[in-house]
Length: 343
Image (tube, rainbow, N blue to C red; front, side, top):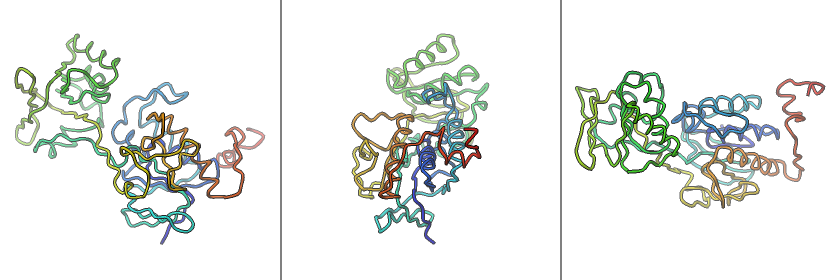
């Protein structure tokens, strides 16, 4: 059976979730597909506890809190989620686009929104034969439960924002924490690097620069230490938990075969409607590219708003799309049960 929908959103990260809301304000109900088993994209999968500071009117929230709030905001519009499946085929047909997922679902969508972040992403993994068996236990590529590192010996690999953020957050509670970075300078925010250096000066953390992991030392099937090669020697760092933050390996996957204009694994769009070279297919968030593009969540929210208006014009051709503020939106009043006299 083919599922008919006015809007199919590919990607349930923050921008995809906000796209539901912006479409809903215009009376468009959306279906949303994501390869992960839960909504939230990178924020929920990799950085659920990482603080975010640049959401307007929200001084600070975690990645997971942002996702939860976006889901709550979208809830009045009753989106249909199709999780744990990937869009595998898209082709133009009369009435829109025929879309098939890896789960064998078929859609007829009038418009398609690609909000897939950097595409189908996986963490860049540690290439030691013992690493895979330890993954999700003593070795991880994200922090799932910060409390588990209390009074433990922790080694962090990486020099970007995630490595620095978590080293600073975990060092005060860990029995020991060592950050190992292959360069002599960090790639993350200087303010966070300064915090880590202060912790090092206070004896709460150790920093090894120009150093690389060379192997894992096991005691039976448990991780006991990490071998690290520096400019001067090879040493073993006792380790209860190993956190690896080498960034993401972006993969566009089937999107690369949809006939879209792609440059450096990003989809080119216009800045009036955030439409791709294929009319009716839009791209927002980190996967969208245009002159002056900034990869910020708040930029993706702006892109979602303009894309929704352009999609409305496609779904209801010839009908003027009025701009309505949410304070006077009849759709919001109806969905939330607000009386006009109360608004």
